Image (tube, rainbow, N blue to C red):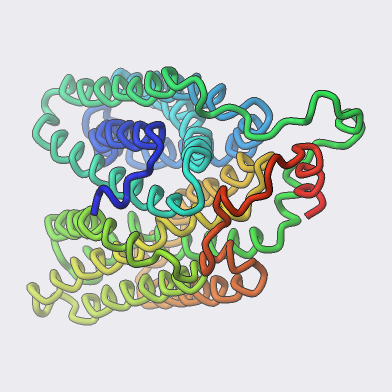
Length: 441
């Protein structure tokens, strides 16, 4: 099964391997920043929350600039230095003794992460074809979760609140593991080059305005896909970190250990099921499957609502419902992770692929800001029923948006027909003519 999912090009396989290493480093520090700032460096909880939110703001702000830079200069010229920038930011967190030092560290992390994720998606799409791209994105997501889960387990055995040096160790290891994708990309000089450039002998190239974000937003199919992503992310991913945890503890009245088991179940479902899912969805309508994602995530919140309705009267049943919510949510993730980036890159043109991916990645920055400011006031203020209704309604609205997307894209983009192979393509196309056609479309 793994052989069937692995991409053919060795460059793509190397990129996937680097994902596993870097994700392991990310898992070392991901659950501990708030704890480290508040318990080790004595930063007030409110200030620590602002520091973490500032990281998402930085990523969101730099995203459009990163997309432009990837299209203008090529992804490798952007990713290589930004990997070092983010590595410095991560490593310096362990030595941040004041909140201002922590703000500086997360600024570097946000600036690097806001560019790297979209650029890496662009690179991975450039070394895979239409037939295997969907499988590759699914495998990449599974490796990402496997690495994060592994790193979390390792960090749990290292960190000690009474020994600040243990936190410095995990942040330094995380920073060092950024060198794996750095060296990996550095030793593949043909990967990550600029995907499209004007023909040197074309006199019209100097007179025609270079396409930009105006053309991206003019794409009707992409606008619909972006709307789906924003609604689903705000109603789904944005709520899983804050809303899910707050509802589980304050409404369903389960303990923190149950919440930890739920996140473990979420990771296990993704790692174990992803390879099966990417095989099953081949040749099926991507828009229909995205609609299914919305329904699955709505169902997961309804299961959490059952835990809240029990209200701790049956501790075992409440715990089962909370864990089941996270597991069902993961089933939706296994569908979303290969389909969404594949469809986005099917809609993108070569000269604007970086911008398309940058806007797609900015959705996660929006969720990092919107999630805490929507869930915390509602659940903390005793309005958990309203929060639950909004999340369910949002996921179902996303499902309807995905269904409507089918009407504005081609069957090939929707995955219902295979993309043309090299044998089907006309011989020796003229690059200037083809570029003009692409801009006309």
